[in-house]
Length: 270
Image (tube, rainbow, N blue to C red):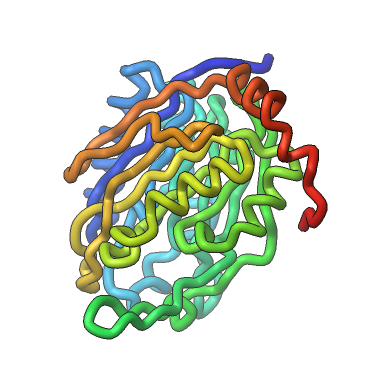
């Protein structure tokens, strides 16, 4: 059965280095979102653990593993699609940063390993080298669901429009961007990039972001967003841990694509 209209939710949290506490917090927000009618709930990047990079290998898990089994059980109990923003997936010395999608039966229907690693040095603001401790993925991932075709990306991927075009050409109607966007880059570019990806591809974008300071000292921007295929922000998070809601209307999306048929005019598809 294809569901044409439903409520989606994006969860904004400040995750720390206590995995059990983070998981409990994420679960409480997911339950809140489901009680308010959300059928698709999206958590932010590294939502289950955000600690010192030197510890990433030791806290990484297999998928399926303890955390994904627990989240899958939660999705099944609530009857919702749940995107576990991302978690460290075991991979030898350098884990993957992996986003996992569960269906309403609690089954893993897709996993996406973050392609683009954030290696950036902005003097006086932020220095991050994800490639020192993580392995990048090598696959573009979209999956058909009863809620529509969902394309999966993570955080820094947002700066690479070719990925979003490939997802759209493959049929994506909703694209998720779980993130831990740094404050200086977020203040400059977060909203304009999220809205651009929605406008260019006439997709719904669900972009939950971390907020607050990580154990490594990085301050995240928050301002989680849900944006419609016309580029209109439908929901924006306040400056705190919270959950936001927006209606996904696939019939409206079809009308946008029909009235401004730019996706049929593509000349340089990836």
